[in-house]
Length: 444
Image (cartoon, rainbow, N blue to C red; front, side, top):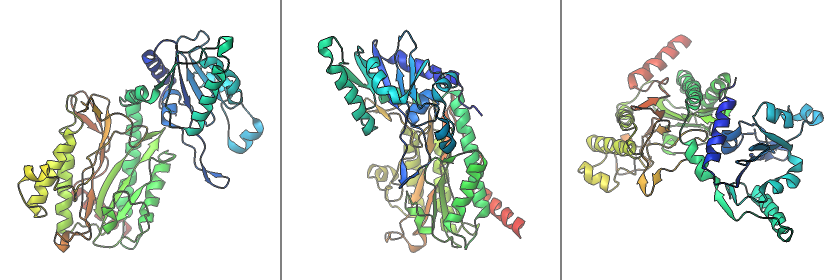
Protein backbone atom coordinates (compact mmCIF):
# COMPACT_ATOMS: atom_id res chain seq x y z
CA UNK A 1 0.00 0.00 0.00
CA UNK A 2 1.49 3.34 -1.09
CA UNK A 3 0.74 5.89 1.60
CA UNK A 4 3.07 8.72 0.51
CA UNK A 5 2.90 9.05 -3.31
CA UNK A 6 5.93 9.61 -5.53
CA UNK A 7 4.59 13.03 -6.41
CA UNK A 8 4.94 14.15 -2.79
CA UNK A 9 8.56 13.03 -2.57
CA UNK A 10 9.20 14.94 -5.80
CA UNK A 11 7.53 18.04 -4.36
CA UNK A 12 9.71 17.84 -1.24
CA UNK A 13 12.89 17.59 -3.28
CA UNK A 14 11.81 20.51 -5.44
CA UNK A 15 10.98 22.60 -2.38
CA UNK A 16 14.35 21.88 -0.81
CA UNK A 17 16.28 22.67 -3.98
CA UNK A 18 14.37 25.96 -4.32
CA UNK A 19 15.87 27.00 -0.97
CA UNK A 20 19.42 26.06 -1.93
CA UNK A 21 21.84 28.66 -3.27
CA UNK A 22 22.64 28.55 -7.01
CA UNK A 23 25.51 26.26 -8.07
CA UNK A 24 25.18 23.97 -5.05
CA UNK A 25 24.69 20.29 -4.23
CA UNK A 26 22.97 18.49 -1.35
CA UNK A 27 24.24 15.08 -0.24
CA UNK A 28 22.44 12.62 2.08
CA UNK A 29 23.53 9.09 2.96
CA UNK A 30 21.08 6.33 3.87
CA UNK A 31 21.12 4.91 7.37
CA UNK A 32 23.80 2.26 7.87
CA UNK A 33 22.98 -1.29 8.88
CA UNK A 34 23.61 -1.74 12.62
CA UNK A 35 24.92 -4.97 14.08
CA UNK A 36 22.97 -6.33 17.04
CA UNK A 37 25.56 -8.94 17.97
CA UNK A 38 28.20 -10.82 16.00
CA UNK A 39 26.66 -11.32 12.51
CA UNK A 40 23.05 -10.56 13.50
CA UNK A 41 21.68 -7.24 12.31
CA UNK A 42 19.06 -5.01 13.87
CA UNK A 43 15.87 -4.64 11.84
CA UNK A 44 16.70 -1.99 9.26
CA UNK A 45 15.08 1.40 9.54
CA UNK A 46 15.85 4.13 7.02
CA UNK A 47 17.25 7.51 8.08
CA UNK A 48 14.31 9.90 8.49
CA UNK A 49 15.74 12.71 6.34
CA UNK A 50 16.69 10.26 3.59
CA UNK A 51 13.23 8.67 3.75
CA UNK A 52 11.55 12.08 3.68
CA UNK A 53 13.16 12.99 0.37
CA UNK A 54 13.11 9.63 -1.39
CA UNK A 55 10.94 6.93 0.16
CA UNK A 56 13.84 4.63 -0.75
CA UNK A 57 13.98 1.83 1.85
CA UNK A 58 17.41 0.30 1.29
CA UNK A 59 20.78 0.77 3.00
CA UNK A 60 24.00 1.51 1.10
CA UNK A 61 22.51 4.43 -0.79
CA UNK A 62 23.30 8.12 -1.24
CA UNK A 63 21.16 10.97 -2.57
CA UNK A 64 22.65 13.89 -4.49
CA UNK A 65 20.35 16.82 -5.28
CA UNK A 66 21.86 19.17 -7.87
CA UNK A 67 19.61 22.10 -8.84
CA UNK A 68 19.89 22.96 -12.50
CA UNK A 69 21.81 19.84 -13.55
CA UNK A 70 21.05 19.29 -17.21
CA UNK A 71 20.96 15.49 -16.97
CA UNK A 72 18.63 15.45 -13.99
CA UNK A 73 18.63 17.04 -10.56
CA UNK A 74 17.96 13.94 -8.45
CA UNK A 75 20.78 11.41 -8.49
CA UNK A 76 20.56 8.21 -6.45
CA UNK A 77 23.45 5.86 -5.77
CA UNK A 78 22.28 2.42 -4.67
CA UNK A 79 23.14 -1.27 -4.74
CA UNK A 80 23.04 -3.13 -8.04
CA UNK A 81 20.70 -6.04 -8.58
CA UNK A 82 22.41 -9.23 -7.42
CA UNK A 83 20.41 -12.48 -7.73
CA UNK A 84 22.70 -14.36 -5.34
CA UNK A 85 22.52 -11.75 -2.57
CA UNK A 86 18.80 -11.21 -3.18
CA UNK A 87 18.28 -14.93 -2.56
CA UNK A 88 19.69 -14.41 0.94
CA UNK A 89 18.69 -10.86 1.82
CA UNK A 90 15.67 -9.90 -0.30
CA UNK A 91 15.02 -7.98 -3.50
CA UNK A 92 16.87 -4.80 -4.42
CA UNK A 93 15.60 -1.95 -6.55
CA UNK A 94 18.78 -1.60 -8.55
CA UNK A 95 19.41 1.37 -10.80
CA UNK A 96 16.41 0.65 -13.02
CA UNK A 97 14.08 0.41 -10.03
CA UNK A 98 15.52 3.57 -8.51
CA UNK A 99 14.43 5.48 -11.60
CA UNK A 100 11.19 3.62 -12.29
CA UNK A 101 9.84 3.20 -8.76
CA UNK A 102 11.48 5.98 -6.76
CA UNK A 103 11.65 8.87 -9.20
CA UNK A 104 15.41 9.25 -9.57
CA UNK A 105 16.51 11.17 -12.65
CA UNK A 106 19.79 9.27 -12.69
CA UNK A 107 20.92 6.21 -10.74
CA UNK A 108 24.41 4.76 -10.37
CA UNK A 109 25.85 1.75 -8.55
CA UNK A 110 26.95 2.61 -5.02
CA UNK A 111 30.22 0.78 -5.79
CA UNK A 112 31.04 3.52 -8.31
CA UNK A 113 30.41 6.47 -5.99
CA UNK A 114 34.10 7.24 -5.45
CA UNK A 115 34.52 7.67 -9.19
CA UNK A 116 31.31 9.62 -9.89
CA UNK A 117 30.35 11.78 -6.92
CA UNK A 118 33.54 13.88 -6.77
CA UNK A 119 32.80 14.91 -10.36
CA UNK A 120 29.30 16.00 -9.32
CA UNK A 121 30.68 18.00 -6.39
CA UNK A 122 33.54 19.58 -8.35
CA UNK A 123 32.69 23.10 -9.51
CA UNK A 124 29.87 23.52 -6.98
CA UNK A 125 30.39 26.46 -4.65
CA UNK A 126 28.34 25.02 -1.77
CA UNK A 127 27.71 21.59 -0.34
CA UNK A 128 24.58 21.10 1.78
CA UNK A 129 25.24 18.30 4.22
CA UNK A 130 24.45 17.34 7.83
CA UNK A 131 27.95 17.12 9.29
CA UNK A 132 28.22 14.99 12.41
CA UNK A 133 25.22 12.74 11.89
CA UNK A 134 27.17 9.95 10.16
CA UNK A 135 30.83 9.87 11.12
CA UNK A 136 31.87 7.27 8.55
CA UNK A 137 30.25 9.19 5.72
CA UNK A 138 31.75 12.48 7.01
CA UNK A 139 35.18 10.94 6.48
CA UNK A 140 34.23 9.64 3.03
CA UNK A 141 32.97 13.05 1.95
CA UNK A 142 36.14 14.75 3.16
CA UNK A 143 38.20 12.30 1.12
CA UNK A 144 36.23 13.31 -1.98
CA UNK A 145 36.88 16.97 -1.22
CA UNK A 146 40.60 16.21 -0.83
CA UNK A 147 40.55 14.47 -4.19
CA UNK A 148 39.09 17.58 -5.83
CA UNK A 149 41.55 19.86 -4.07
CA UNK A 150 44.47 17.72 -5.19
CA UNK A 151 43.52 18.55 -8.78
CA UNK A 152 43.24 22.31 -8.24
CA UNK A 153 46.33 22.95 -10.39
CA UNK A 154 44.60 21.19 -13.27
CA UNK A 155 41.66 23.58 -12.87
CA UNK A 156 39.44 21.60 -10.50
CA UNK A 157 37.30 23.81 -8.29
CA UNK A 158 36.50 22.47 -4.80
CA UNK A 159 33.48 23.81 -2.94
CA UNK A 160 34.18 26.85 -0.82
CA UNK A 161 31.40 26.40 1.73
CA UNK A 162 29.54 23.71 3.66
CA UNK A 163 25.97 24.55 4.72
CA UNK A 164 23.92 22.66 7.32
CA UNK A 165 21.34 20.74 5.32
CA UNK A 166 19.37 19.67 8.38
CA UNK A 167 18.40 23.27 9.18
CA UNK A 168 16.43 23.60 5.92
CA UNK A 169 15.16 20.05 5.87
CA UNK A 170 13.98 19.92 9.46
CA UNK A 171 11.93 23.07 9.09
CA UNK A 172 10.22 21.46 6.09
CA UNK A 173 9.51 18.30 8.07
CA UNK A 174 7.79 20.33 10.79
CA UNK A 175 4.79 20.99 8.50
CA UNK A 176 2.84 17.81 7.80
CA UNK A 177 1.01 17.42 4.50
CA UNK A 178 -2.43 15.87 4.13
CA UNK A 179 -0.78 12.57 3.12
CA UNK A 180 1.46 12.63 6.19
CA UNK A 181 -1.44 13.35 8.53
CA UNK A 182 -3.34 10.44 6.98
CA UNK A 183 -0.45 8.08 7.74
CA UNK A 184 -0.15 9.46 11.27
CA UNK A 185 -3.90 8.88 11.79
CA UNK A 186 -3.40 5.27 10.73
CA UNK A 187 -0.47 4.79 13.13
CA UNK A 188 -2.49 6.40 15.93
CA UNK A 189 -5.51 4.17 15.25
CA UNK A 190 -3.39 1.00 15.38
CA UNK A 191 -1.74 2.16 18.60
CA UNK A 192 -5.11 3.05 20.10
CA UNK A 193 -6.35 -0.48 19.48
CA UNK A 194 -3.19 -1.82 21.11
CA UNK A 195 -3.76 0.23 24.27
CA UNK A 196 -7.38 -0.90 24.45
CA UNK A 197 -6.23 -4.51 24.06
CA UNK A 198 -3.73 -4.09 26.90
CA UNK A 199 -6.44 -2.67 29.19
CA UNK A 200 -8.71 -5.58 28.36
CA UNK A 201 -5.97 -8.16 28.96
CA UNK A 202 -4.69 -6.71 32.23
CA UNK A 203 -5.06 -8.95 35.31
CA UNK A 204 -3.33 -9.17 38.68
CA UNK A 205 -0.76 -11.98 38.53
CA UNK A 206 0.42 -11.22 35.01
CA UNK A 207 3.68 -9.36 34.39
CA UNK A 208 4.44 -6.14 32.56
CA UNK A 209 5.82 -8.09 29.60
CA UNK A 210 2.46 -9.80 29.10
CA UNK A 211 0.94 -6.41 28.31
CA UNK A 212 3.90 -5.50 26.11
CA UNK A 213 3.20 -8.69 24.13
CA UNK A 214 -0.42 -7.59 23.63
CA UNK A 215 0.82 -4.24 22.31
CA UNK A 216 3.30 -5.87 19.92
CA UNK A 217 0.63 -8.25 18.63
CA UNK A 218 -1.78 -5.44 17.81
CA UNK A 219 0.97 -3.32 16.22
CA UNK A 220 2.01 -6.12 13.88
CA UNK A 221 -1.57 -7.17 13.20
CA UNK A 222 -2.27 -3.61 12.06
CA UNK A 223 0.62 -3.63 9.60
CA UNK A 224 3.27 -1.83 11.65
CA UNK A 225 6.73 -3.35 11.28
CA UNK A 226 7.96 -2.06 14.61
CA UNK A 227 7.21 0.14 17.59
CA UNK A 228 8.13 3.79 17.15
CA UNK A 229 10.25 3.53 20.32
CA UNK A 230 10.84 1.10 23.16
CA UNK A 231 7.50 0.46 24.83
CA UNK A 232 7.14 1.42 28.49
CA UNK A 233 4.92 -0.83 30.62
CA UNK A 234 5.41 0.41 34.18
CA UNK A 235 3.36 -0.97 37.06
CA UNK A 236 3.20 0.44 40.58
CA UNK A 237 6.23 2.46 41.62
CA UNK A 238 7.85 1.82 38.21
CA UNK A 239 5.44 4.41 36.77
CA UNK A 240 7.47 7.06 38.61
CA UNK A 241 10.50 6.22 36.41
CA UNK A 242 9.95 8.31 33.27
CA UNK A 243 11.88 6.10 30.84
CA UNK A 244 11.33 2.74 32.54
CA UNK A 245 12.21 -0.06 30.13
CA UNK A 246 12.64 -3.35 31.99
CA UNK A 247 8.96 -4.38 31.63
CA UNK A 248 9.46 -7.42 33.87
CA UNK A 249 7.69 -6.68 37.17
CA UNK A 250 4.48 -8.41 38.27
CA UNK A 251 1.12 -6.65 37.99
CA UNK A 252 -0.32 -6.36 41.49
CA UNK A 253 -3.89 -5.68 42.48
CA UNK A 254 -4.18 -2.14 43.86
CA UNK A 255 -1.41 -0.75 41.63
CA UNK A 256 -1.68 1.42 38.55
CA UNK A 257 0.07 0.51 35.31
CA UNK A 258 1.36 3.22 32.97
CA UNK A 259 1.80 2.25 29.32
CA UNK A 260 3.67 4.59 26.97
CA UNK A 261 3.76 2.92 23.55
CA UNK A 262 3.09 3.60 19.90
CA UNK A 263 3.77 1.99 16.55
CA UNK A 264 5.38 3.32 13.40
CA UNK A 265 3.81 3.20 9.93
CA UNK A 266 5.99 4.07 6.92
CA UNK A 267 8.46 5.77 9.27
CA UNK A 268 5.74 7.93 10.90
CA UNK A 269 5.38 7.59 14.66
CA UNK A 270 2.49 7.55 17.07
CA UNK A 271 2.99 8.11 20.79
CA UNK A 272 0.28 7.30 23.35
CA UNK A 273 0.32 7.00 27.13
CA UNK A 274 -2.51 5.69 29.26
CA UNK A 275 -2.59 4.83 32.96
CA UNK A 276 -5.11 2.41 34.44
CA UNK A 277 -5.65 0.22 37.52
CA UNK A 278 -4.33 -3.34 37.40
CA UNK A 279 -7.40 -4.58 39.24
CA UNK A 280 -9.83 -2.54 37.16
CA UNK A 281 -10.78 -0.02 39.86
CA UNK A 282 -9.03 3.21 40.86
CA UNK A 283 -8.44 3.86 44.57
CA UNK A 284 -9.59 7.29 45.84
CA UNK A 285 -6.00 8.63 45.77
CA UNK A 286 -5.28 7.18 42.33
CA UNK A 287 -8.52 8.63 41.01
CA UNK A 288 -7.73 12.07 42.42
CA UNK A 289 -4.28 12.18 40.79
CA UNK A 290 -5.57 10.67 37.56
CA UNK A 291 -8.42 13.16 37.17
CA UNK A 292 -6.03 16.04 37.85
CA UNK A 293 -3.71 14.87 35.06
CA UNK A 294 -6.72 14.36 32.78
CA UNK A 295 -7.92 17.91 33.49
CA UNK A 296 -4.47 19.19 32.49
CA UNK A 297 -4.51 17.06 29.34
CA UNK A 298 -7.91 18.40 28.29
CA UNK A 299 -6.98 22.00 29.13
CA UNK A 300 -3.89 21.82 26.92
CA UNK A 301 -5.97 21.21 23.79
CA UNK A 302 -7.57 24.64 24.23
CA UNK A 303 -4.14 26.24 23.83
CA UNK A 304 -3.11 24.50 20.60
CA UNK A 305 -4.18 26.52 17.58
CA UNK A 306 -2.67 28.77 14.90
CA UNK A 307 -1.26 31.93 16.43
CA UNK A 308 -0.63 30.43 19.87
CA UNK A 309 2.97 29.83 20.86
CA UNK A 310 4.50 26.43 21.51
CA UNK A 311 4.74 26.77 25.29
CA UNK A 312 1.17 27.92 25.96
CA UNK A 313 -0.17 24.38 26.27
CA UNK A 314 2.60 23.43 28.69
CA UNK A 315 2.02 26.53 30.79
CA UNK A 316 -1.69 25.70 30.94
CA UNK A 317 -0.93 22.19 32.25
CA UNK A 318 1.44 23.59 34.86
CA UNK A 319 -1.28 25.89 36.18
CA UNK A 320 -3.91 23.13 36.32
CA UNK A 321 -1.56 20.67 38.02
CA UNK A 322 -0.16 23.18 40.52
CA UNK A 323 -3.65 24.34 41.55
CA UNK A 324 -4.78 20.74 41.84
CA UNK A 325 -1.80 19.73 43.98
CA UNK A 326 -2.61 22.60 46.33
CA UNK A 327 -6.23 21.47 46.54
CA UNK A 328 -5.12 17.92 47.36
CA UNK A 329 -2.73 19.19 50.03
CA UNK A 330 0.40 18.02 48.23
CA UNK A 331 1.60 21.60 47.83
CA UNK A 332 1.02 24.58 50.07
CA UNK A 333 0.98 28.21 49.03
CA UNK A 334 -0.37 30.60 46.41
CA UNK A 335 -0.51 29.12 42.91
CA UNK A 336 1.34 31.91 41.05
CA UNK A 337 4.14 31.95 43.63
CA UNK A 338 4.44 28.15 43.50
CA UNK A 339 4.68 28.22 39.71
CA UNK A 340 7.31 30.98 39.83
CA UNK A 341 9.33 28.90 42.29
CA UNK A 342 8.99 25.68 40.19
CA UNK A 343 7.45 24.04 43.25
CA UNK A 344 5.50 21.64 41.01
CA UNK A 345 8.64 20.15 39.43
CA UNK A 346 9.22 17.37 41.99
CA UNK A 347 5.82 16.04 40.81
CA UNK A 348 5.80 17.19 37.16
CA UNK A 349 9.37 17.42 35.89
CA UNK A 350 8.96 17.25 32.10
CA UNK A 351 7.31 19.44 29.52
CA UNK A 352 3.80 18.76 28.26
CA UNK A 353 4.82 17.55 24.83
CA UNK A 354 7.18 17.45 21.87
CA UNK A 355 7.05 17.58 18.08
CA UNK A 356 5.89 14.33 16.47
CA UNK A 357 6.43 12.96 12.98
CA UNK A 358 8.98 10.67 11.38
CA UNK A 359 10.87 10.67 14.67
CA UNK A 360 8.90 10.22 17.86
CA UNK A 361 10.75 13.26 19.22
CA UNK A 362 10.59 14.95 15.88
CA UNK A 363 12.82 17.63 14.42
CA UNK A 364 12.06 21.34 14.36
CA UNK A 365 13.07 24.33 16.46
CA UNK A 366 10.94 25.11 19.52
CA UNK A 367 12.23 28.66 19.64
CA UNK A 368 13.11 31.18 16.93
CA UNK A 369 15.23 34.15 17.89
CA UNK A 370 14.81 33.28 21.54
CA UNK A 371 11.00 33.36 21.34
CA UNK A 372 8.68 30.36 21.53
CA UNK A 373 7.62 29.25 18.08
CA UNK A 374 4.13 30.25 16.96
CA UNK A 375 1.97 27.27 15.98
CA UNK A 376 0.81 26.88 12.38
CA UNK A 377 -1.44 24.38 10.59
CA UNK A 378 0.25 21.07 9.88
CA UNK A 379 2.44 21.01 12.95
CA UNK A 380 2.07 17.78 14.95
CA UNK A 381 2.85 17.28 18.62
CA UNK A 382 2.09 15.29 21.72
CA UNK A 383 0.18 16.43 24.81
CA UNK A 384 1.43 14.49 27.83
CA UNK A 385 1.09 16.00 31.29
CA UNK A 386 1.89 13.75 34.22
CA UNK A 387 2.22 13.56 37.99
CA UNK A 388 4.79 11.30 39.64
CA UNK A 389 4.92 10.97 43.43
CA UNK A 390 8.17 9.24 44.29
CA UNK A 391 7.90 6.24 46.60
CA UNK A 392 10.49 7.82 48.91
CA UNK A 393 8.88 11.27 49.02
CA UNK A 394 8.53 11.70 52.77
CA UNK A 395 7.04 15.19 52.36
CA UNK A 396 3.66 13.71 51.44
CA UNK A 397 1.37 11.26 53.21
CA UNK A 398 2.11 7.59 52.63
CA UNK A 399 -1.19 7.06 50.79
CA UNK A 400 0.05 9.20 47.86
CA UNK A 401 3.51 7.68 47.49
CA UNK A 402 4.36 5.61 44.44
CA UNK A 403 1.51 6.90 42.28
CA UNK A 404 2.60 7.75 38.74
CA UNK A 405 0.15 8.95 36.09
CA UNK A 406 0.70 10.22 32.55
CA UNK A 407 -1.90 10.73 29.83
CA UNK A 408 -0.58 11.37 26.33
CA UNK A 409 -2.30 12.13 23.04
CA UNK A 410 -1.14 13.06 19.54
CA UNK A 411 -2.51 16.19 17.87
CA UNK A 412 -2.14 18.09 14.61
CA UNK A 413 -2.67 21.83 14.41
CA UNK A 414 -5.57 22.68 12.07
CA UNK A 415 -6.83 25.96 10.66
CA UNK A 416 -8.97 26.69 13.70
CA UNK A 417 -7.57 24.53 16.50
CA UNK A 418 -6.23 21.00 16.63
CA UNK A 419 -7.24 17.49 15.66
CA UNK A 420 -6.73 14.78 18.29
CA UNK A 421 -5.45 11.68 16.49
CA UNK A 422 -5.57 9.33 19.48
CA UNK A 423 -9.18 9.61 20.59
CA UNK A 424 -9.69 5.85 20.20
CA UNK A 425 -8.40 5.07 23.70
CA UNK A 426 -10.64 5.65 26.74
CA UNK A 427 -9.46 8.39 29.09
CA UNK A 428 -12.08 9.03 31.74
CA UNK A 429 -12.11 6.97 34.94
CA UNK A 430 -15.62 5.73 34.15
CA UNK A 431 -14.72 4.65 30.61
CA UNK A 432 -11.59 2.81 31.69
CA UNK A 433 -13.28 0.99 34.55
CA UNK A 434 -16.22 0.03 32.33
CA UNK A 435 -13.93 -1.28 29.57
CA UNK A 436 -11.93 -3.40 32.00
CA UNK A 437 -15.05 -4.71 33.76
CA UNK A 438 -16.62 -5.73 30.44
CA UNK A 439 -13.46 -7.57 29.41
CA UNK A 440 -13.46 -9.56 32.66
CA UNK A 441 -17.12 -10.45 32.31
CA UNK A 442 -16.42 -11.88 28.86
CA UNK A 443 -13.65 -14.09 30.25
CA UNK A 444 -15.84 -15.21 33.16
